Length: 336
Ligand code: UT7
Image 1 (cartoon, rainbow, N blue to C red):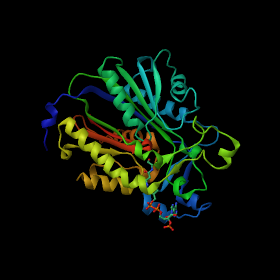
Image 2: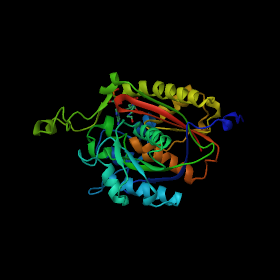
Image 3: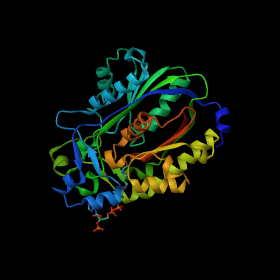
Image 4: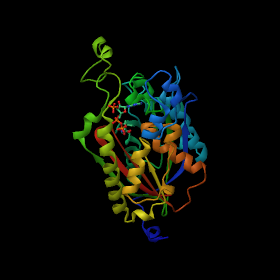
């Protein structure tokens, strides 16, 4: 094993001292979907790798999930909300258009004067928010930050559209970041955007461009629309390029990465990505079979599972990579 990277100082020295996740109780299996849609367990499993997904029940909201995930991260880190001086919330669909989701999570956590804001960067939102928190910690604006990804796309899906509704699940994940001396921290960041691909994944109506009217609702324009094939084709190249760039900044070889935590959009995308990067399958964290695509929550949920299974060791290198609407994509490489 090469350990040359151990000598290199991180660009942002920090430690992830807590992780947490929350998944709604209600579970939908592929067979459940096949009971009201023209689809099958076989199609969903072989095309996506998904077997089940969690969805919010009526009355539940994404901020509650975010609060639970953040509380679990705080408990793991043995910290209390008073210790937190920054809250960033990655999400695509806000709790309400104004003031978004972050203030609801801050309220639920009992934060008082802590700055908070939402980060919207498609399914790459958590990667962007992590990078932003790192940058704010580096400049001294924050010492202890919570970064949350929470998503409830089930509320924006047309449950009659088999090409989208089988893919997504709800959930939240969170990390607690603390400034730290030493070798742990962010080694490399590559954030990217390709606005020529903004049409590949969108909710057209409900914003300023196309405000909600009876017509927009009747035309189904408040539902998520996706060009799955176009996204699939772009995804592998985008994440591979960002991962190579982040590794170059970190001055590590891809073979030095111990764990890849990719956005869980499609098992075939993940397999193609790691094949292209020549990273062995046993280094790749996959939970799409159980949770489906939870968008901004997918990486922190998978990270939390890895941490709670006691699989990550101090000094190991993790690559977190995602792509999504925008198209925003990126990779953060960190030393645990
Ligand atoms: O977080 C990022 C957002 N999302 C993504 O990254 C998604 C990326 N794209 C994908 O994962 C894949 O493109 C999909 C899973 C969405 C689709 O897989 P595909 O292999 O690209 O299938 P397709 O869209 O080419 O559809 C193949 C066939 C079509 O039928 P015809 O036209 O060949 O007769 C679809 O109508 O499969 C049909 N189909 C389905 N059949 C059964 C589409 N969805 C379903 C379904 N069940 N749920």
